[in-house]
Image 1 (tube, rainbow, N blue to C red):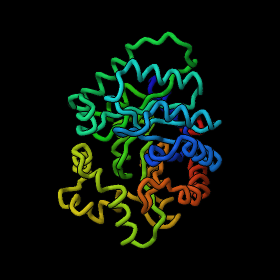
Image 2 (tube, rainbow, N blue to C red):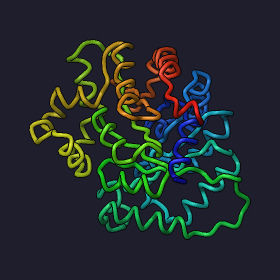
Image 3 (cartoon, rainbow, N blue to C red):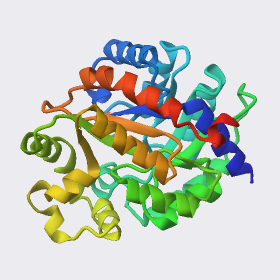
Length: 318
């Protein structure tokens, strides 16, 4: 019951639509801060930042973005559990939570073998590693000033076992590289209470050939080579043929919402209809590390207006 209440409260703070960005890892801090300010002004409720190997440290990065905004929720989407021990992660989360009450969300993920091995760790079963990490996080002490309410934590969950762990030991789940079908399955596992906040890649491009080429090169190419995502896609019914050549047309179309404003609005709405509380859109562009701000500018009026019109009673109650 406590996790249900936490999930509902967090859904209200995030709003219906946010932005997911890995590209902010590749721009200077001042530029990243100005982008966060712009997203806040546009009305997006949350900014999800990634953490990769040899990129910006997630908690420091979050602190810089929180410092320059007033209302925007900043979430790690997700912080790698192999990058720091649970005591350090808990202390960092409490530090940010006390400085910026109700505006930082601790998103945790088990990462992938190559990104873990290169750190000098031995990659083990993700579910076991995450379960142990959460237990250590619960047991960690913290004696410095902290907020009345500790920061919410959510898990980068895809498959049923991790989704159940997110249900039972976190405020919810933040699935990446997913479809509305996956959102429906995830909601069935999570139940009514915990937060469900999928990432959705978007691309304002109406030409099918161009859109699919950009999506393959700048979104699917590396992701579909990772075992965790291959197993995830297999559970959704995508086989080896769908992984060839950077991804079949049907796989590209399932994972990337491309087309005009209405096409992207429909895809976001499909996630809501399937049980999502919040959708974090990730703009895909034809240039590496492009922030996609033009797309976010264009999409904000329609997506945010549409999300307000389709608010659920659950969210209004928060």
